[in-house]
Image (spheres, protein in one colour):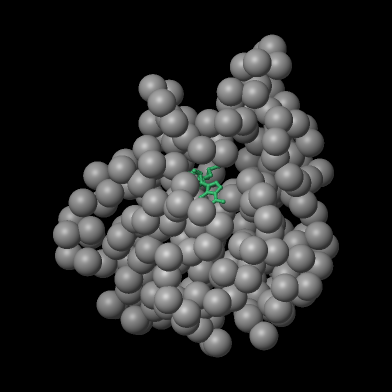
Length: 218
Ligand SMILES: C[S@@+](CC[C@H](N)C(=O)[O-])C[C@H]1O[C@@H](n2cnc3c(N)ncnc32)[C@H](O)[C@@H]1O
């Protein structure tokens, strides 16, 4: 694949857009399904939880979140207008009943009041954080004091094998994420790593691994 194609793939992953954006999001749903299902399971959602997800893409997994316990509410916060529109469309019934809402990101601060959420999570989004300190400060502010933050990502050792990652992704090992959290008023509660079946990415079969870090504001 040439550099221009790889750059375009990276841009679509960062912010799906235009005529190929819907298709890219659908492909991510397939390639990231195990990560997302694991992330939801490990959130251990309780009745009345108020969930914030950063970067849900087209929101395909939102019904599983809402159905994890009674009276759960969900907010998806994404900077891609196409994804917010798709997520609203795919989850129209949940939006109508007020169980889910999708908010378009428009700047570094989050348009949510302090202590709005009991759980926050992001799957495959940390690579795109331009300013992790601001992101974590905002997450700290909008989570309540007994809240939980879960970050789910593929580690650098795996990401370096994916050609489009060279075009603007930041990559992390678990220890990097621990340091980032601890420097920004989060305490790491647990870290788990899971092997995934190999997948074909950009024409190559690659072994994949997911890291899931759970933390709490301190
Ligand atoms: C690689 S996709 C991952 C989608 C889904 N979470 C998954 O694991 O399949 C990244 C998603 O996060 C959104 N995104 C990237 N950076 C973001 C940011 N800083 N704030 C909000 N959304 C972001 C993108 O628009 C896109 O929908």
